[in-house]
Image 1 (cartoon, rainbow, N blue to C red):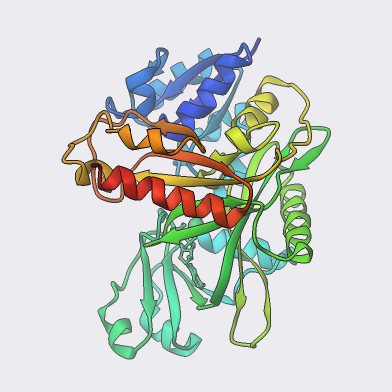
Image 2: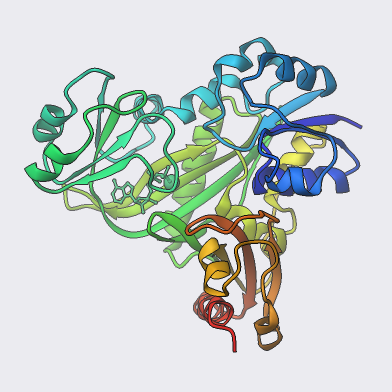
Length: 380
Ligand SMILES: Nc1ncnc2c1ncn2[C@@H]1O[C@H](COP(=O)(O)OP(=O)(O)O)[C@@H](O)[C@H]1O
Ligand SMILES: [Mg+2]
């Protein structure tokens, strides 16, 4: 048995911890928020900041190996413990800084959208005008769910954007998007496996639905899997890596696959694997951390759709948090799972839970997922 440490106790950490429990491993979580999913539901949670040197020393003394539930985990304080981290500190550092990430991708021949790095202190407004409008400015550090991003269409937008961002900026061309897909790669010391491609639909930059099988031509699905494998291998990954892709058309008018960003961890789009695949993303990472060889995940028959439950659904039910009125589920037997994360306070756009639908076709699974959520949002 291994004792596995998880830096961060949100819903991703919680589901990973549950897999480790089932596989007979020990778990210690480091998480400051007493209202976090892990703090609500688990023992062996050290309540301290991820930058607290005493807490980190205690945490690493108790675990054989450790992972993190966010690429925004501060990497500096982890330097002394690099030997116990999977994925490695280098993978964390590359994926938490968009400037390093895009530079890594392009120098290794994995195509990101056309971009330009704007160093901290450099004039981002002049850089955006010379890069060309429209474009998107993204802060190099700290962004998620579209936070720290500015769509620049006009010179007025450029004037209105903040001049500084944490770690500087990355400017990107705006693609005409057909779809967004993701590919998870699980890699141990000996071999690598990749999950089937997931199709992801976002609302207000937040993942809303994930559909498997993806409604994307097979050639692009194969290419995405190859690219994801290549990236994991170029990074020397041990652990799990999610590669987010765009399928769309850029300034050159050619429709193709682009790498968007990397997340060296279990991913929101991978929630669907808990029901749709023979091995879930959480079990895949748990196995690697426990020293059990990876195994190729296969998709079960039919089609699957994961839908996110944001705090908005609680608020629409007149609830401030806690339990959700699930009476509507009685009319949706094809909803095969509802997972409520146990966060106390519901806020708009806060990820509070998700559910998974099983159907014959991707279209039907999506339609049922949307109907189920509408029925929860407007009960009775
Ligand atoms: N260059 C782009 N062209 C078109 N849409 C984009 C581009 N960059 C981001 N987006 C949209 O914004 C979403 C969030 O951007 P992303 O870079 O993935 O940041 P985050 O870290 O917030 O997830 C993407 O999923 C996509 O829908
Ligand atoms: Mg993203």
